Image (cartoon, rainbow, N blue to C red; front, side, top):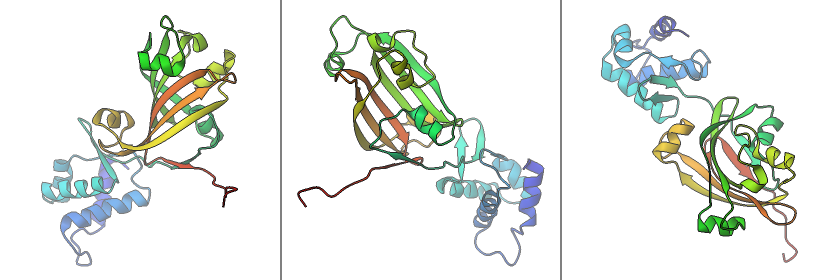
Length: 257
């Protein structure tokens, strides 16, 4: 819906009609919500600046500002610094099992979604002492540090920070595909892992990368993956959007009950 049609549609919804009750900003927020729910305002659509919409509807700028703020608090709109106000992207929640070892790419492909990755930083260096201990590395060995934004169908879902010994993956490893696929191709297929989940909130930097508000809920997942011979092949810390993931597991009655 372009700007002209949006203003016409809002005007036709009788913001000042006798049938409408409540403060004017509430009526405007309700009208915008209706357009979003009806699919007339698509996810990612840009809304007019406050002053422009206020002049077009012949209402006060404070009315538009308050309506926008109400809808931002409800998650229907989002403000992008330097760009304006947009309809929030709808995130389809993903149910992720905890009992199966698989990569982000494999998980997304199994759901019919297209996985991708954007490199945030990449370096090859010697590990810190605690990393050497965790990975079982000698003092002269090196690791690949690869921080990536993981996306599905172009939507950012997780920040993944991987630490992998270069003897398993090499310094020229591809950065945008599945690391598990790359390790398997090199003959170092992970077969088991220990995973820890922690509920956290995102700092401003991570939130900006994931296109959510600072302080938004997230799941911090730490994973240590091992080879068949028990060598550690990967250590990863990932922040998954809390509004996008549900992690589930199956529980069974134990023999002691």
